[in-house]
Image (tube, rainbow over all chains, first blue to last red; front, side, top):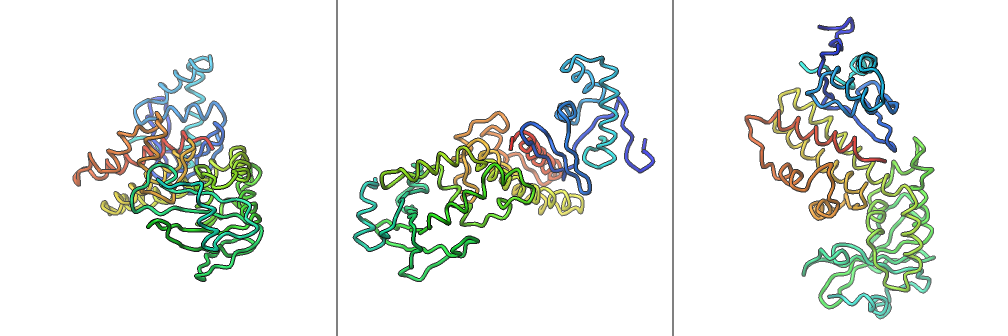
Length: 98
Length: 259
């Protein structure tokens, strides 16, 4: 399923990967993601979510891990993860696995 | 075995020691215990006055003064490579790797030249051939600076460039070039990793395996590093997967290296 801008839409069942050419920096624990056009400085929780991207876990799986780590409701965590990853996919610093 | 206590005397006897010398220190593979019969000894002399090279050998440095004089001599059949820094030049280099400069998006650390980086990569392992006071002060200052972060960030930046090349070449179907670019990306990333863990030396790739053995990190085991470096699992049929795997290791390193 493709979004309006041509990017694949992120759903709880999506599996994510980083594009081959994404630039990553860790400044004292805070992650910066840089794509061809866009760059993001991630918050602590967003950094944690992005660290879970491994090409096999779904967004829902990541939501479960986030829920356990931050002691929040899994459904809310999955929704937050979906929103974050949607932004990152649109900016081409994360990709939905085919 | 070289007797380091005789270095000053050997230099003085050859009229290669400035009157205003503040420090004499040794570096390189011999000092690190990795040298062999044909290894040179790297000697740096820091003084208040700018040295005039007897062999008219000067390297350009983006400092004031803007040249780095050099000499060569042989002692007991071994070549000594001598560099003559002024104390002012060294102070200018150290200022470029301060925590404040590293935090600045336009910081001068971004444009360090070859010889500046070489000095920064030699100093942590240097051994004094004098009373050691200047070297001790300088090494202590480096420990509290952004020295490691600067060198690690520089290597990761080089890795990014090669990663971008590999990704582009892979997309274009130029697999052999992509493999070479991925290899280069990995080596730069490994230099960034080892630098962040205190083993700097990106200008000397021949000692990368030695540095990797010393750091012992979960981010990348020595065995995995060596398997990738020696293309152990590479097959031409699976070149794209191999390139993706190597670039994945580079990402893992970039994510783990704390600047």
